[in-house]
Image (cartoon, rainbow over all chains, first blue to last red; front, side, top):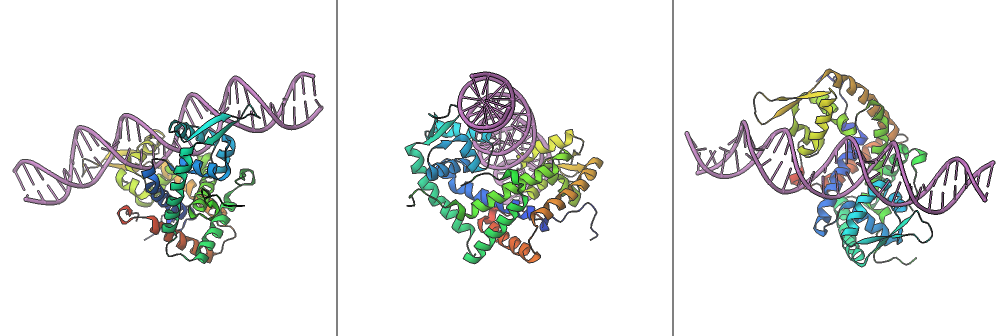
Length: 155
Length: 155
DNA sequence: GAAAATTCGTTAGCGCATTAACGATTATGA
DNA sequence: TCATAATCGTTAATGCGCTAACGAATTTTC
């Protein structure tokens, strides 16, 4: 078959593999957590609050690698569901601090179990060494495509 | 530091690396193609049409790994921009065939150049062997998280 | 040959990503 | 000390992902 000048070898594209794998992973993860009635982004909010306690919306968005406006709706829905509440920061009038409510910790416990299940499923048949290699190569790619200004604190 | 029972080791999560890397890659890719005035999904449409010629919306969605309703808006906008047109299929009244217009091929040529640039940038410092390993490991993960019913023809 | 099942493309509703812009607040610099 | 710059959270507009449901057309089954 004569290659057209307009053809592009998707199969050999790093972006193609990344997108395909990420898409499949997200689908599986969403199926895993759907019974708990929350979304991927809500699970991430729960995780960061469990890990680091109350924090500002700007900090939370930064840790989640999304822009602050993207977080507004997610927090709105979580607040409506009784998972968290936003309180004015006593030290800085600009900030609101996101506080998990008791229900959040219960739900996050379940998310941890889900996260471990999907992780186990995703890495089935891969040795620790291969997982380490995958992590190293993915991090290399990530650093390659990240311009310095984009590096955000994600402690 | 005593680990809380609510803590989850994000750094050791395959999903975390995948999401971080994919997110960074998408950001870089969007920056790369933004000057051409089209989006990632539009670029994909152009690519598949260049590769395989006119096809139904259902086939196109399948190749792009998205649900057909997700494609409607993208095609609406591309049609409005004069990049393609939808024509009724002569053989099957249910189907519409998506036909690229001349402008589409011109734009796709530019996309190929962009795709190659971002691919080169993403894989800088990685040997062919490492790229092959990354592909193999990503595909293994993708297969692990894909239930059989989800396998779609993406020839 | 006709009824039932499936496919196709659409609309509606919802979740979530971006950028731009805005007002309120705080930090910085002269 | 005050003007300027930056930060915070929001709204608006836009792009795009999903599922559910619908009507039209085709395929399948009996």
